[in-house]
Image 1 (tube, rainbow, N blue to C red):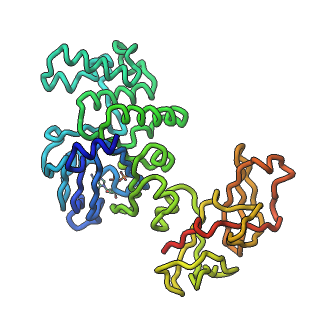
Image 2 (image 1 turned 90 degrees about the vertical axis):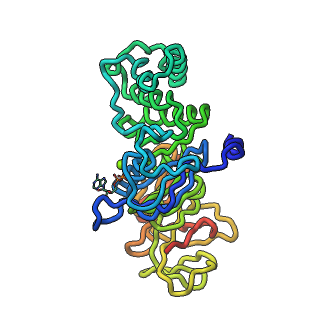
Image 3 (image 1 turned 90 degrees about the horizontal axis):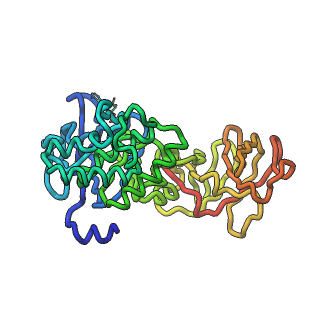
Length: 365
Ligand code: ADP
Ligand code: MG
């Protein structure tokens, strides 16, 4: 799908060329010197904590905010300074304000009517779009009679019916409860695949970003810390921030020395030689909880000993908190496959050995 698009289009759907934004001339940058290309048809997510600049970035792409530096290009055309209605972009905001006095069909038809699209065409496009979001049977209802998930789908249909080149979505699922959010994630992704529009999706939910996106940009303080496929950013986080924000990670501070990280108070943990990390460098050793083994070790694994401090059973998995040295605790996630009975699992105070494959352990600045 994406390959076809890339052959047809010469330009990225969205290009941010050294874009910066300060709300206050002397203040901090909400978005700083940011460079980014988003390919046509891509599902691209901006992930980061509250206040990191996600909404500001989206508003600059949509034309709701002007950058103080740099340029915004859509399909190769410089649109910096153009108002929202002069851009082939639609936005679904977090609070999807629908018109309560209009039917769903009229809500979705609103933009097309304003643009003077002929009536028969409006009827056809609105019908098709309501079917796509599975609300065709409710076309005559009014928004107040709908559930949160249904209203969200109306907002989506209302944006998509305009056939924008790019759809911007600012935490569109944040107001929904967990079950509904999971279902909407799947539906949204399906719709995006079917119509092939470029999605720029803002979220602070890492699971959402991982499951939905072709690529994810992890943002921190107005900058992109890392940009890549979900697997890239999860398996190979480039920075301590990316490792801690994207999923749970054990971050153990210490000093790197010839293939080991020396904890400040405790043992040296083998990590294998690391190109580019000089001896004596302060680092964070990062390992995902599910990458640590508690038994059936294989040759070549790095090992360490510790004391179980806590055992948290959660159905399919158990999480152990294991203290390697005073104040240094790692979390280990194990499937409840072999040790499925309580008496088979470790409990507080027991000494255990843990192990990991050297390639699963990252040494971050
Ligand atoms: P996010 O969407 O990631 O939570 P925002 O883009 O809303 O982040 O905000 C980024 C930074 O810019 C924050 O420090 C925020 O306080 C500031 N900011 C956002 N909007 C405005 C505004 N209209 N005026 C002044 N500062 C703003
Ligand atoms: Mg925001």
